[in-house]
Each structure stands twice: as structure tokens, then as C-alpha cells.
Image (cartoon, rainbow, N blue to C red; front, side, top):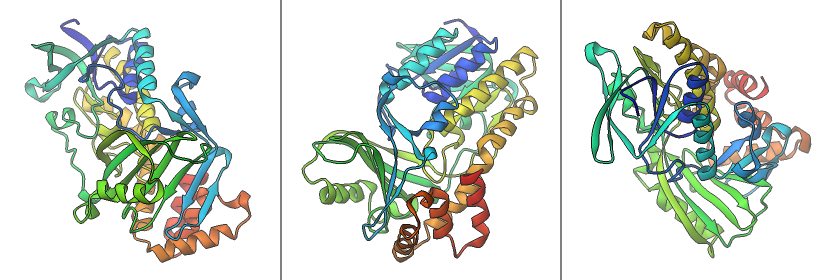
Length: 391
């Protein structure tokens, strides 16, 4: 580890790894810092990704994938199942331990210096401009200077707060999530399952993501508005007791997912935020792997260009924010509006939606048509549905 790098990336997840890789490929010297002792551990993720989204940022390797998904099954409150299995609905179940490790290995191969068990305790900000970080590693405290810090340190990101950005989120947009990896269960491994209903997961949904025909990640997220009355843990346990009473629990993870539009400000002088730290999660699904990697790719490239031009001002780095908004940010704003309307639907509305969609020919049971049917009482949102699902 040197005393100065062109770029320091805080966080070794997919967004951080991809930001580091692309900054290095752009000619910058890059240091990637990860607070945990090993990349990819612990896993705090449902591990499912859309195939098309992942393929847009990386060539998926067989070793990263535990299962290939052919489609999704949406289950209404009264138990009716709507199967969606178009080409755009295919996906992968990743092994995040292997996947994250591989991405950082790729970044290292591109010239990135990597340091694990490196706990960043503050940013260095003389005269209000971010110029490095203070970190603790193996009992030693160090300061490392740089031209640009990229914060990819997750939903609890402190890098952005230290730099003076407003990173707070409304309680109703913070999903309280808990997931258990269950074995000794029976299910169709070709499909991911989503369960809806006020008694199951108010302001959210339950997911069942199979790794094979006997193993699955089963979890839920509920809006912070409802978690005060009954915990996400209790909702999930009630679901498991009913659906998978004989399951064995191999792994449990809890956390919050920011299901809100991207932060209004994700750059400052010498600073960029990526992934969960920037609230770049899809507000509708809660998925963030593909979007974090896309954001990291843009941020790394913009950072390298800014460093080469010796201009790392907020004005220069806004190019990243502009490109992100065009690529996904605007769509996420629309998803957020759709989410707010969908989560206000009653169980009766959801059951009627299932009935209406099941009356369509199977080839017309797309996500776009499902949401258009669900939001028939909100015609202004139909155009948002068309834009995000069709275009």
C-alpha cells in the first residue's frame, strides 16, 4: 500500500470491484479497501439477478452460478399463481461468495491494489475537498491520499456522510429484510417465487429463490412503516412455518434495503457514491447487483478521465451522475412511483389482478401487462409502466 493513489474505492462488493476495475483500466492507480477479512463474506443478498442485466456488464462464468432461472411465479394473497417466463424474465442464482471474489480478482488483474480487513474510519477533507481516507489495518492507523474516493460501502455508507452528502432515507422507503437459506424443501428450481399480501409481507413481498430443487433462499422485505407493528423476522417465520414446516435453516441474514430513487446528490469534490451507498437499488424489486455494477462501470471510467485531466471537481464528476440518470436513474424514479401505488392495493385488488391476468393467453402474461392491470385505477402510471417494462 502506497501513501497516495489516484483513486481509492471503499467497499469490495460488485459495485466497488467494478468501479475499481474500470478506473484502473482508464489509467488510474487504484486502491480497493474492504473492511471484512475476506471478499464475499458474509453474504447479505438474495443472490438472484436478471440474466440480461448481468450480461450487460460482465460475461457470466459457470462457476459463479448455482442455478439458472427460466421465469417467475407471482402468487396472489388467495394463492393463485401467475407464471411469467418470457426471455426478459430469465435470470441466475449466483453464489455470491464465489462471484464477489471473482470480480475483485478481475479488478486485481486489471492493476488494482486490494486490501482486506481495512476499516475506513474517516475521509481526509482539508479545505472541504475529499483528498483521501483514514483507515485501520492490522492494528495500525494510516492515512492514504488520493484524487478521488469512490464510496461503495453499502446502505449504511458513512463515506457519503463524512463528505457532507445527505444520505438519509424515509422510513417508508427502507425495507426491513430478513432471509434464511433453507434445505430439505421441495420446489421447482426453474422458477423464482414472489408472494404478496398484507398478512404475508405488507409493503413488500416474500421471495423464494431456489439454488436447486432442495435448497433455496427464502426471505422477505416489508416497508419500515409496518415493521413497527410486527417484525420482518416474525412475518418470515410465520411464512416458513406454513409453507416449509420441515425445513432446516443453514444461514440467516438481516438488513435494510433502500427502495427509493437515487440520492439527489451522489458526487462532491473528489467523491463519488456507487451502489447501495447511492441508493441505486431498483425501488420496485429491491435488486441491486446489476445496477451497482453498471454504476461502478460508469463511475470508474469518469473518475479515470477526471484524474487524467486533473479536474476532480464536483462539476466534472457530475458527468457520472448524468450518465447514471440516463442509464437507470430515471427508470428508478418511475419504478418508485409504481411501487407506491402497488403497495397501496388491497388484497382484493391483488386477487382481481391475478384473475384478470390469468384470463390472458400465457404468452401475454408479461410483467408489463401485470402492472398495467394492477394499476388500471391509476391511468397516469400506465405510461410509466410502458416506459420501464417495454422500452
